[in-house]
Image (cartoon, helix red, strand yellow):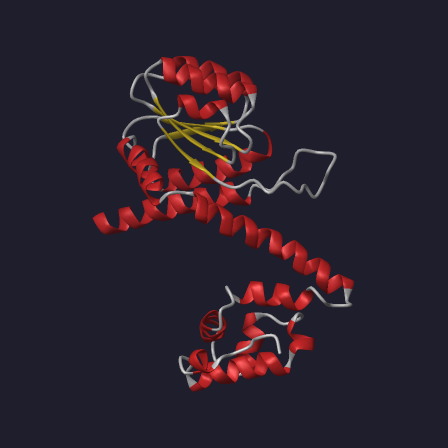
Length: 252
């Protein structure tokens, strides 16, 4: 029995939620191969009902349940896939726990205040994909924004940034030489900068007007190259964009 339910917990479950828990306990062997949608279909409920039933029983969501089920599994493929999926769950959970809501608001306010001015977005390497998507979405929201991942252009632009302009820097580890130099130049020019990275020890922070720090997963899938997951940066980027969209909708 994967979900042990006490009398006090049982009293909090609706009839449908009890049926969901019963189905899970009676189908432990097959559950690792199923999705939350599959369980909902089998119990004539909905994914939200399945999720709610699991959480009421003290398990932090379906992914945690599936991970527990896969641990003793003799099927190496199932166990391996669950381990890989759990990496994304860890990244998402950690980044949401680590960023402050007030820090998010501070970043959003800086971006909103700079809407009528020129905004620059700097990044390097694989992180540039995050920066390009972020820039594209801000362009759709009518922001005057320029993005580059060229090291020479980054340094030259940072030297010319005018006072009170905004620069947004995306970086995974925050150690890239050109980005650190750019952050320093922006600071010396009296301009504002937002740093979005996954390192608490990066020198970028000492030059930042405000910043958001995500979570860096230490295990690298492709060991010979620096291609650590950028999922935390994508999550932070999405939070900022979605909030800006919500603000736009409220003013219409």
